[in-house]
View 1: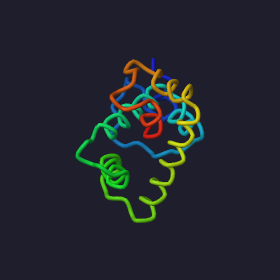
View 2 (view 1 turned 180 degrees about the horizontal axis):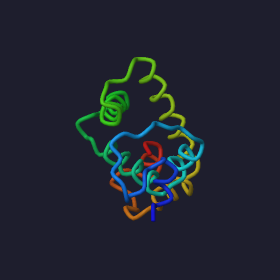
View 3 (view 1 turned 180 degrees about the vertical axis):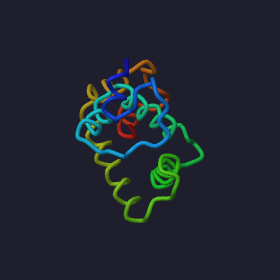
View 4 (view 1 turned 90 degrees about the horizontal axis):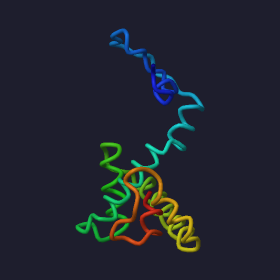
Length: 125
């Protein structure tokens, strides 16, 4: 049977070869990306990798590095500015709510915190 997550993304059955698929976009896909523990854990592990990038001392450099790894292109000045602002807001949020920051680290199989404090990792997630 087809995994329910794959069904949300209109994956074909595994019984036939499908060389060409029609693109689709549905609310279920957005909800899957936001709520499925697999995607959440992937975001946290990526955040851990960003926090661990010691060769990138500033948030601006880390945002640019992460953006390029995720999308394959550098961010525009506007995108970079928006993401640095979002990071600052997330840091403030998670530093004020340490229990929420610890919950971020508890999702999935690769749970636990890295060298960084939980609030920093949660903000980058």
